[in-house]
Amino acid sequence: MPSYLVRALSERTRLPVVDETSIDAFLAPAAGEAEHAILFFTGDPSQRPEADDVAVVLPELLQAFGGRLRGAVVLRTAEDKLKPRFNVVVMPSLVVTRRDQPLGVIGKIRDWSEYVEKITAWLAPDAPVMVASAGPKIEITHSGKEIVR
Figure (cartoon, rainbow, N blue to C red):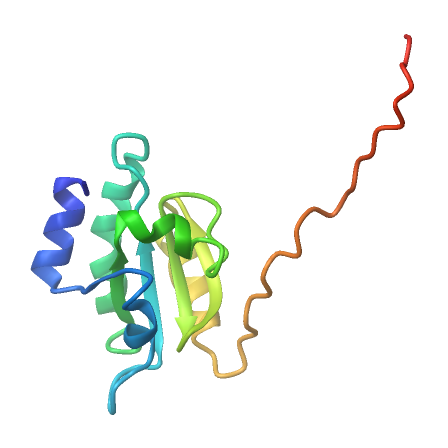
């Protein structure tokens, strides 16, 4: 269950709530809509109280970028399924996309200037798409020998 502030955000600003079945339809902009979107992954509010802080910031970001971003809240039960697709590791997170391609992720609550700087860069037409993680960078094997120190 989302926190009171996250529910109020969705209701007051009329942000859609998306899940794994509706995310692609949301990310495909209708005629005249911005091609960029910002997705709010809240996490469990009892474990991630920062989600309430991000819920306060999100409408301000949407207003600051004046129609250049569309926003949505990711349904809590869909977060685990969608996190890998959008490179989300930390909760809460905001993900900026160009259509269905993730451009960047901002985890936890940040300073306003950091939000503005990063989102401005991601809205540039030549902003690169994030590359999905290829898994671990280091492989550790065990030879079966006992190490004595």
